[in-house]
Length: 86
Image (cartoon, rainbow, N blue to C red; front, side, top):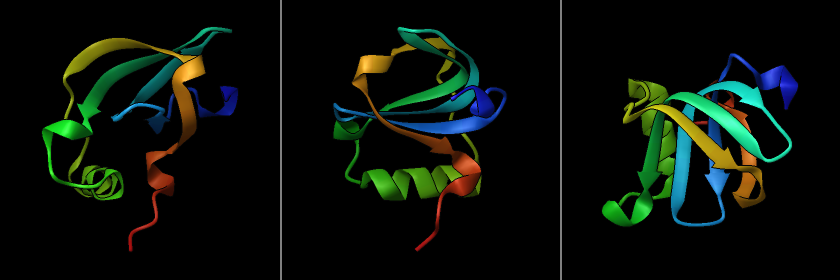
């Protein structure tokens, strides 16, 4: 994951949450994300894929300056720029 430091990333979590923001650092237990959008998909009718694609097109809707994500909750991480539009 170190090669993603400084990049805007999409982090898919085991729960209904997803996170989009700039990866600042990585520890054994946490990811340090800055200028993050922590989004609960239960708050909207859109799919995870559509929300990420919309964020890639319109920009990150920041609602956190700094966020620590527990690594054990992570399903996947990728660069936002690697999102494939349908």
